[in-house]
Amino acid sequence: MTKFKFPSEEIELPSKGLIYPKDNPLSSGKVEIKYMTAKEEDILSNQSYIQKGTVLDKLLESVIISKINIKDLIVGDKNAILIATRILGYGKEYKVDIRGEEHTLDLSTLENKQFDGSLISQGKNEFNYTLPSTDTKITFKILTGNDESKIERELTGLKKINKEASPELSTRLKYIITSVDGETDTKSIREFVDNYLLARDSRALREYVKNVQPDVDLNYILDSGEEVTVPIGLSFFWPDI
Image 1 (cartoon, rainbow, N blue to C red):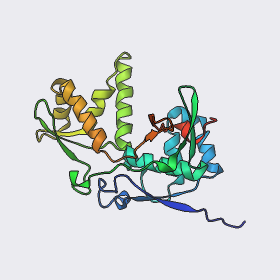
Image 2 (cartoon, rainbow, N blue to C red; image 1 turned 60 degrees about the vertical axis):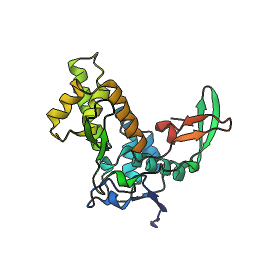
Image 3 (spheres, rainbow, N blue to C red; image 1 turned 120 degrees about the horizontal axis):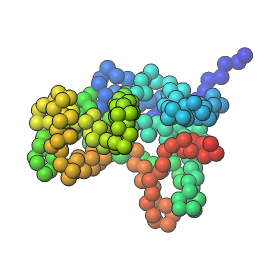
Image 4 (tube, rainbow, N blue to C red; image 1 turned 120 degrees about the vertical axis):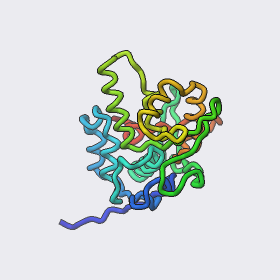
């Protein structure tokens, strides 16, 4: 049988690769992906993957040509690859329902947010921040797929102990924060989050993380002038699923 060479595209990551260690292929700031085929459509419709919540990761594993570990990706870089995959697979037009009215979004207009690489040392996923209410100096990182998996496992375990508990916010902060006043051990960080992190400081930190983290600008202006956030999920790739 004749071997077909499928076209591929190189994707610029919002992080520019600056937050990854220099020995990680992601430090190049670029990832090569191939066009979707029927194989990827099988992945998108795989009920087992859908139920486990792993379908988008499985899709990325299939389309990414570069020798990377997708669990190393931060969410913003992952979003950029997903959007590029969607455009290459099904085109730039994305129909969404907003309050009962259908709108067609042009995904090709989405751009990466400006990322200030001077906020970190190249190759180190660590940012400095001073909590506004207490002047506590902390460092934090942008969560990767590996971190998200650990958080999910911890939350699942906590739910088994107390089904009514909802500790997602504090649990995520325990993984985001990497030091408190120079203390880097896990015990000190967890104790700080549980007992000393004021609600107003928690909110300020989360807002700062949101503003500085590399990502795609998912805000979209409709023809009416209204601004909406582009949703990325399973229907992003296959609205009929």
